[in-house]
Amino acid sequence: MTSRGPPPGMGPVMVLNAKTQRQTGRQAQLSNIAAARSVADIIRTTLGPRSMLKMLLDPMGSIVITNDGHCILREVDVSHPTAKSMMELSRAQDEEVGDGTTSVIILAGEVLVQAIPFLDNSHSALHPTVIVRAYHAALQTALELCERQAITVDVKDTERMKNLVQSSIGTKFSSRWNHQMVEMALQAVLTVARKHSGSTATTGSSSTYQTTEVDLKRYAKVEKIPGGEISDCEVVKGVMFQKDTVHSKMRRRIENPKILLLDTPLEYKKGESQTNVEITDEKDWNLMLQAEEEYVKNMCTEIIALKPDIVITEKGVSDLAQHYLAKANVTAFRRLRKTDNNRIARATGATICSRTDEILEQDLGTRCKLFEMRKVGAEWFAYLDECEDPKACSIVLRGGSKDVLNELERNLQDAMQVVRNVVYQPTLLPGGGATEMAVAMGIRRASQNYEGVGQKPFASIADAMEVIPRTLASNCGVSVIRTVTALRAKHAAAYNEDPDALCHVGINGRTGELVSMEELGIWEPFTVKVQTIKTAIENACMILRIDDIVSGSKTKKQ
Image (cartoon, one colour):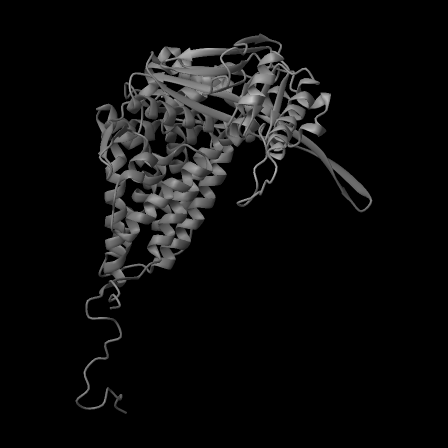
């Protein structure tokens, strides 16, 4: 029986627009892998303490000089859809754990490269879903191996925490001032950290729980002030903001001040919409002005009755209100940002009030020990310093230029995220490629028990994991093959002696020598490492399952 083809005289049916470009099957998969590999190659040299910097010119003409993987990829403009997906990967890593943005891209690129022999083989090519299944099985094995390698740390162990942060920012531009940056990151996070406890009641039983909240975005504000030296950077034990007093005669230094926070204007209330008043008698005009003055005077009297030393409002302060407050020896600030007001409230224990007639004595903030106006650079700043248990802080960064300040801020944010991760989950893994090599060794052994055609893709994840120690060795300038082979041999020997033993040998990122990470003090947060492995392999699996790329522009309507 013959198969029926298209009717005589009929050609192939064209569904897509003629201008549309389309890649399908193996061609699409290999194109995706090539795009991912090129993105990984862009930032490969920025891994480790001997990393190189990248200079980027953004569309506005300003220059960015950095070795932060996320920052580099954010500035690079790409057109390939897979390359864009890889950039999303680094953004997700940055938002989730704040560190490991370079590692995740390099690892994802290498996992995809390892799939090429299985896809591009005309005799025994594997189906992408077989490869993906093996990759997922390898991911589960890798996570189990990481848990076995992890050690628990006490957050109050300052020396161990310093080593941890040091290993995070030792690869950054600010590594010359590491000691100071580490102190600042630790101080800022432990200041902002806040424990919540409560209880959940269920039928017949109740249980208590305790959670830790570390909101760096809201309560740890970074103030970048050009000028001075990097050694002048500090974490204020309280809050500082760029405002001057509203009246020149107001006090500029107060010890143990009482602070009142408002979000209401200290001026006559204006109408919501345009208001017209017709006056027939000239006395009424004076009465109107008098009513306005009385309104402002009453508000100031209600405030002064509580005897505050400082009044801070998010709205305006009229000239008349300034007069009354200055007369009562009260220092006032106006038009403060809502976010700054919230931080002051948390640092000083004050409550933000909306009406002056409802203010109570307990609404005043009394936890601040010193208020002072200080001139930093060319601007005046108000410091609310030496607060008791502030739970909010300001971080002052000084540096020669805006480029230096921006890079310092990026480095400090990474360091603070690392500390935050450990506060949430106090477990660590050895750095310097030791964890990756231990995981690779474990996956190779586990692949012997993996049955079926997926055995080789399962074992290929072990080769992909070795890309991190390989890149570290390459960026040091030592012989990559000798170093990685020696590291592999040390881990294999340790595994043969005792499969459950913890081998912490890794690569010293500065000299390229093999050393114990425990002796060197190079540790990474468990959450960062696990998130890197999960994100890289899951993203690689998603890209491998793409078998059709359709790209083309729609015709513009006239």
